[in-house]
Length: 342
Ligand SMILES: Nc1ncnc2c1ncn2[C@@H]1O[C@H](COP(=O)(O)OP(=O)(O)OP(=O)(O)O)[C@@H](O)[C@H]1O
Image (cartoon, rainbow, N blue to C red; front, side, top):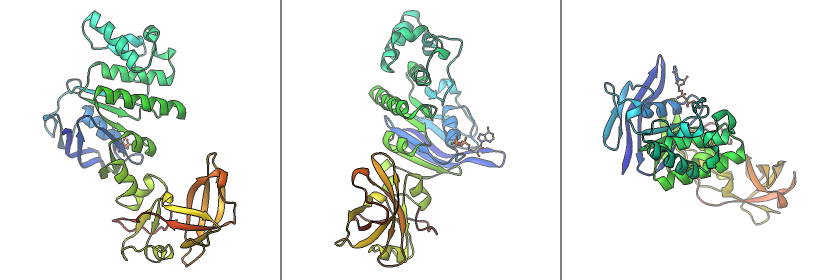
């Protein structure tokens, strides 16, 4: 069942339409990622849901209750929504415990709740008396999460909460947050510009472009069945082929629409005598466990170039002849694209 519903949500800043007729449904207990290029309207959408901004059109409802439309707006503090921003959202003059307990009533209850929340977000109880400047960035974000959870929100909004952290820490904290939120059963909407974070953390991914949600669906939908070439490339390497290019790969696609393949749909073999398509390695970039190879087909023109990752231990050298076989189907794209490869 849908907990959060956005209907034709519109927000303008002067001439800029930051959100335009946005429809979005978020199921109870699920996690939705909002992704898209810089300036596409992700933060605006989150701030509208939180109640930090007013709507110019449309409506937002939570659990059947109207939160906002053109003429009404429930104040942010009455929405029962938790919000964790990128960084710096803690009160600097309050201790960790005071930050977490901010707004909670009852001394005894506050104390017990702070301890439970510190445990939940993996912070030692001895940190309760520290102030934010005595914590690392990752610890501060854990406190911010604990503070948002303290009020038992109906919905949690996360605006790039891990983006200021180093890669390793970022992944650890992301896994912890996923665990904490699902064990607490908290419905979550989060903004990220990191595609892999969106694909791994979310049940539903909504891709925004120029204030519009161009596609919303499961991570698999967005990755394997993107709507257009731009959406395809947003989620990783995409090989977009049309007409003769598809023929050169031995694929059958509709004549006037392009189609997309992911590089991992190409099975590469060295030697290549038995493979339907022949090619050679143009460049080879070592990346640790894998090498990124730039491949060019050599059989039937037009000759296509594309990149694919291959295990380093057995990666072919530059100039090596290879064989290629396509597995799975090419995915048809709705909008034509002039470029053949990414
Ligand atoms: N308070 C504001 N006043 C004027 N324009 C604004 C305001 N807030 C956002 N905008 C504009 O609205 C558009 C959407 O901004 P928004 O911050 O929602 O994008 P975003 O997708 O979150 O971007 P980023 O990934 O860079 O954070 C942008 O063109 C931005 O310049």
